[in-house]
Amino acid sequence: MELKGSRTIAADRATVWARLNDAETLKACIPGCEELTGNPHEGFAAVVKQKVGPVSATFRGTVRLTDVVPGESYRIVGEGSGGVAGFAKGAAAVRLSDSESGTELSYDVEAAVGGKIAQLGARLINGFAKKMADQFFERFQTAVEGG
Image (cartoon, rainbow, N blue to C red):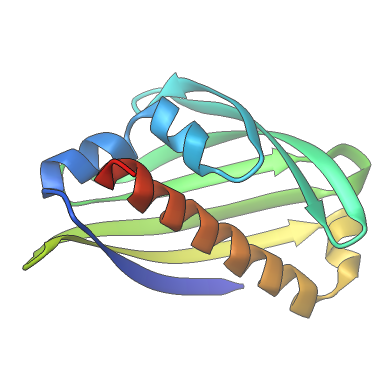
């Protein structure tokens, strides 16, 4: 499954970049995130609780940053296990560019799930993934803009 999108954030690129690398900002923006520890250099450990259709699960996993071009782009790669519910893994290419009203943040997400969650069907899972991505980037924009 793939998702693409972009948002214009009313802040300079250096500020957006710093917040994209800040564990507290990321924790506040990831829907269902109960814990996020670590740093951009060594990676993060996360605990995320989610309900996908009738399946509720607590996912424990890791997040790491690769292909880092400071102030410009990176690839964020994560994977987690939800026990009997299954697993989720994915990556997002995130790019920043200057725009008239701040910084354009564009993203290209690819994700996969397996186990019990995968049995729910692609349509439900794709809708859920889109909702999660939209919520993350909406929360991120609000956090950076000071809302």
